[in-house]
Each structure stands twice: as C-alpha cells, then as structure tokens.
Length: 169
Length: 398
Image (cartoon, rainbow over all chains, first blue to last red; front, side, top):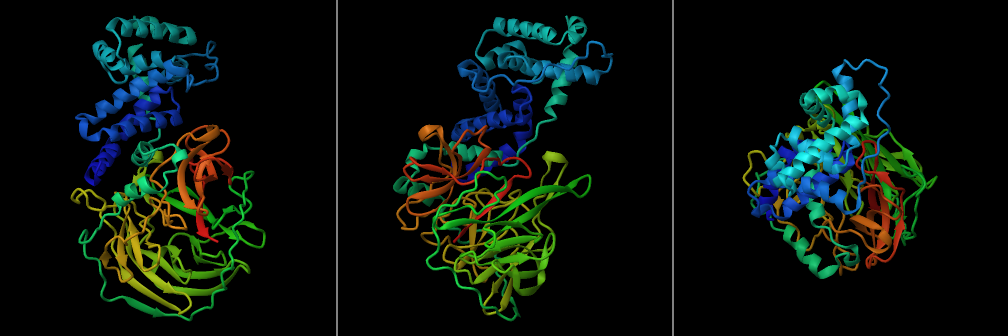
C-alpha cells in the first residue's frame, strides 16, 4: 500500500465506518468493544488487499459476517454476550412500542451469533434469502430454517413478544 | 413482527459509537508481528526507511521572512543530573499513577486526562487536565496549566497559564514548584515542547482553541480547518522568543493524492531528534513534514527515525536497532505487547501491553519488554485506553 492507497483507504474508512460500526454493533449483540474489534479486523484484512478489492464495503461486510460466525463456530472465543435476564414485564402493559423494542433487544442479544447474524442480514441489511446464503456460505434452506428457529427462540426468551411474533406469521 | 424487528435493529444500531481512529487501528493491526521478533534491526530499518521519503517541494511555501523577535530576560536553568538515574520504577496499583513510572533513560514526566465539554448543540471541545511529576513526593501533582512539557532531565517544565490557549509561558522549577520566569507572548499558543538539549521551547500558536469537534456525542469529529498560525522558538537562557508564521496543513479534501494533510485542529509542532529542525504532524503517511527553524520546508533529516506520530526516536541508544511500525502480538506466557513507545536502554523497550490478563486490546498499560520478548515487566496498571477519561502519559529522558 503506497501513500496514495493509504489515503484512499483512510477516506473509505472515514466515509463508511459509521455503517460498518452499526452493522458490527448488531452482529455482536450490542457489544461496543466486540463491534470495534470486528470492524478493525475486517478493515485490516481489507487494507492488506486494498488494491485487489473492487467493492471495499461489500468485502468488509462479508468478512464481518463470516468472522462473526466463525468466531462462534471455532471456540466461542467471544462467547455470547451475557446479559441479565430480560426485564420482568409480564404484568406490565406492553402497548408502548419502545418497551417492546427494549424487550426485543434484550432477546436478540441472547441469541447465538449465527441466529442473530441471519436476522441482522435479513431485517437490517435487507438481504434476500439467496444473498444471505451466499454471504454465509450455506444453503437457502439453512438460512430459512435458521431464521425460523431464531424467531422461535426470541419467542421463547421473551414470551411478552409472542403476540407480536404470532402476528408476523 | 418484521416491522418491530426492523425498527428495533435500526434504533439499536444508533447506539454504537464510531471511533475516530479505525483506519489507524486497522493499518497498525495489519502490521502486527510477533514480539519475539521485536523487529530488530535489519528488516525494520528497511520498513521504516520507506516512510522517510523526502518532502522537498511539497505543500505551500510557508516561510515567514519577517520573524518577530521579542526580548525577554533569560534564566539560568538548573543542571541535569549526571549520571541520570536508570532504575525501574513502577506503579501498578493506581490509575492514574500516584508514584513515578520510569525505566532506563525514560520517565513518565507528566500525564493528562482529556475530556469533552459541550460548547453548543453542534460543537464540543476536548480539554486536558495535566498532572506533573513532583520530585518532592516522587509522585504526580494535578495542575491547572493549559499545557505542560517537562524538559529532559526532569528539573524544569514549560507551562502555559490559563485554560485553553495562552499568551503567558512559564518556566517552572519542578523541585521548588516556583515559576523561574514568565514569558509574555503576542500570539496565543496551545502547546509547548522542549528541545532535545533542554534549552529551548517550541510553542505552537493558534488563533483560537484547536481542539474543537463538530457533531454530537461520540459522532463528533474534527472540523477540518486548523487555527494554527505559527510558532515561537523560546531560547530560555538567552531570553528571546522568535515568532514565525506557519499555516496548518490542508485537511486532505482538496489536496492531490500523496500530499501531506491533517484534518485535526491541533497540529502541534515538534523538534527533530537533534533539535536543528522542527516538524509538523500529518494524519497521512509519512507522519510528519520537516521545516527549518525559520519555517522553510525541508527534507526529512537523514537518519532520523521516529516512533510513529511521536517525538521519540525509534533508534536504540547504541544506534543498532530500530523499533518497528505497529508490531506486536502474542509472545511468551500469553503476554501481549501492543505498541512500542521508546527505548529504555539498548535491550529494553517501553511499550503498551499487558503483563496480566487484558480484557481487550484497549485494556492495557505501560510495560517494559526486553528486545528478545522474554521478559515483560508491568510499569503501570492496566487501563481502558479507549475510554474517555483515561490517562495518557508523556515520556521524557531522565
């Protein structure tokens, strides 16, 4: 990487790091440090192949998706973000959307990295199932079943959301 | 459900903070190597040399033919200790340190804690609270100076009176805590740094406070137009203060590729290793641009090798080894060294790392590591270096 390359790399990072950090934050279940680590790792790999990559953002994201899942696969190095039990809201009125979102966040943080990644790719990145499959290196059937199991798991973790989840069917 | 899930994800993602130095971190990480190799000598010399390209002709002509000279009354500086102490001093109990941290030829002479203050809905400023080595207690004393720099030898410090930028520069005797001399300046300055021989002070002048960030919360970033105006060279013993204009480097937005640039407001100047030139920091690579003492741009001084973005020499005292860029990883015993900062002596380097268990790359402290990577001694307690309010050391020759 020469001086001009480095400058272009810095410009890319400056422009796109908010988007990458948002993605990393969700993939890691709201863990700021883990998200920074994930983005840094992806950017370091990107930097080492800078001249050979045509679509740097897509490449960085691809590394993040796979890295997140491989970490989980390999050794639970990061483990799941351990969160306190979701707040006891059974007796409270959950009409407020903001409360529902808080419950859902807490439940999302307790999913496995793989389950969460599939949901983030489908509902945050808005990727069709085929693209998710390509990004994660698995079949469309696996994406579909993982998404299904992830939603079921959310229902299990946060029964308060069951009605919302049922409506979604 | 889909709607709720989408909304939740969007809202949650808004809570992340975007670190300002991701590119630096990525470029550094790319260069990590096992510390066992503490990249001594040969290979590294070549790597460093790559960054030492000449900069002749680059950038605007910033020479100021009409330097202002202000007379002041000189002061006799206390002598440096000879021989200078070289013992290893650690404080692994206190954050920030309460007792002197030192190893070999270098000591933590001061440290600062930076925090952000809200100025308006759109702007914040970073302010520094300095603590200064106090030989009377062998610890550190909190100060209210706007900026400080301790001279090599740890006998005196240059201090700036006030809170942000200052027209009053003081020479403080560290042992008596008395100001030996006040020097009044026509142009306000925002930083001071001693020449390597401890006889002159380079003070960087700004028309307004340089550490202003635009934006809210952690999204705030430098505004891209530095208010640097020039610099003073204060000859403390002769009692003169020469002012030279030196506008800031461009922020890189409109410069051609490869032009040195810096989008930070604070662009404090530094001395070359032998004190015959000065340099301005860039946020590009190479990491600095050199000028004569009169402010004329000049080539990178032959043989000068610096720790990246620092005033400290990367070359070992005996001249045989050169610290690498970035470096480190997992050497012996699971201990990690993350950045190499300064040579303590020919065989040991003051570095950032962790001799115990680090929660993350940013949970680290000062360590002393042998060049073969076999011995690591913790000098300071681990702290979360990425967190606002963490202390940042300044290393000075003892």
